[in-house]
Length: 296
Image (cartoon, rainbow, N blue to C red; front, side, top):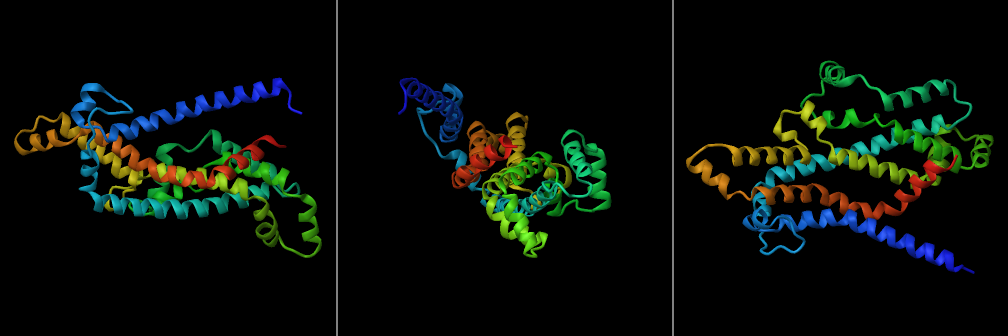
């Protein structure tokens, strides 16, 4: 039987979570509202959940560049899908190896994994390596390779999950029956690890989707820009036009751009796909992170 104290504590916990959720949701609702607010109203009254006058001018401005945005979306979706799948495979394979107590050189690999979380070669050395040795500048590989194996935190979470949640007896029984490590990994470990794989996959996918640094460092061909790089360039162009002293048609065109509303619309366009996908992974995401980081 649930005591009064437990009921009060549960109610209080729900209230705190509801307030925290509202605080997290409010900025995004304000962002969406601002993107539909008429420019002069936005400048005069500031941001509001219920704008005095609505307008679609910000989205009309983005729609006028639909070809560029569609190409950037296609590149981003491709890179995110391939990067997430390959990165998840590499992370899970390395984590499974580190979870084995009999792995030769386990301490060295663990040290390298932790060390990579704290230190790296720096921007200059990595840039010279990727452009001078791997020659990935102005290729899709530049958006894919640098982020594949750079997150030791995810490797440690997966390692802890494999160590504490994959039944050792089942693995040993499979070895006795003659199963190899690849057979064990794909037939036993992977089915037991869906929550942590979903959590890691979602975090890697969000990382690839939101990445703009690789495009900034290694991409100069506008046809290879990801959605984040395209949107950042739009913001820079709008800022330049709004602050320039050009006259004539340029000044008239700059005045017609809803600069504040477009910035809000760009943020909505960039974040919307992740918000649509996240609910489908929410259950596994929470379970995977909780079990993978607490147990052990």
